[in-house]
Amino acid sequence: MPRQRGRRAGATGPGAGTLAFVESPVQLLNVLEWAHLEQVAAGLTLVVLSPHDPMTRGQLRRMAELARDEGCSVRWEEARGGATAPLRTIGGLTPHLRRAHRVVIGDPFSRYVQLLLTLTPARELVVVDDGTATMEFVTQLARGEKLVRWHRHGNGRGARDLLFAPVSATVRRRLAPRPGGTGRSVAVFSAMPVEPPEGVTVAANAFAWTRDRFGPPRLTRGTDIVGTSLVETGVVDRCAYLAAVTALADHHGAGRYFAHRRESADKLHQVATATGLEVVRPDLPLELIARRGPIGRKILSFPSTVVHTLPLALEGTGVEVAVCDIDPAWLTKKASPRAEGFLTGVTDTARTVHRLTRATADGAVSPI
Image (cartoon, rainbow, N blue to C red):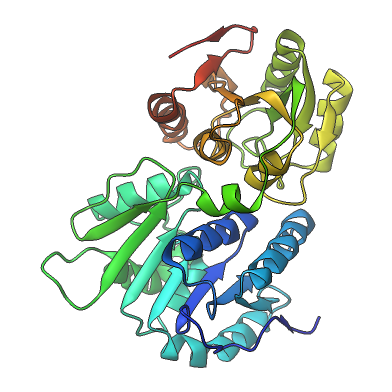
């Protein structure tokens, strides 16, 4: 498939000289939020490293159109379109990487992004939210640990890990804070409750762009459930998850189930059959779908990014967001040893920061 571009890269504007790399719709949304805060959308070059998943690609295309409307230059890269695609992508991006003075990334764990970071002399690096993964990134950065996703299995000593180890080490050094001033800056733009190490600045993502461009939404009288891909990532047992969703739907009178873009079609069919819920596959990140409406007066979610972002996107609308804990008994034998603690941390911080209620699978709802 031929490469598709928006405006010509290198366009003038406040964002000229800024490259942003995204691989998911949420990352792209948060680049737009950051650009709105910094007032640098015009001239910013947004590079979409397109994945294979069709739902993700569809949402990315919709988000790319919104980015063009904001004045961004968009490069759509078929970065995974065959064995030679990475070489073509890297070759085409190298001149832009060498000229950039600021690079914005949505996923510091991505090997693709890590490789690109080794090719740029940019002195300003910005990490925008990739959901709850940002919390893990900042923690690992503060401790000087390897950058490993919280749900990843194994010890990082496989053949591919060892081959890529020099690149990962270089990126960790580039992202590591160096207090005292080195002419290089590292910043994090996040809606998550993070405590950065000394030398790393944090700007709060309040979803101002989302609230400015969408809504306020029309509210229905019903309850909506937000789906999760914890089954697909091997963290939660499918049968346990389906039982929990069924219980939530029954006891809270839910009518719709907003699917995560990575949920499998067969699992969603099971959800619809077992619960009678209307399964909705959003064409944009849920923050925009909810803000655009219509949306239920109550939203139930398992531990995920949205328990932190929806309260911000829906601020002042009267929508109640409640979070359902993941019972340790639901975890699979393949789940990472860190899974239980990480998921508990996501819900606990959401309840503390946003004062969310607790929704249990037996139907009870209790305040913090």
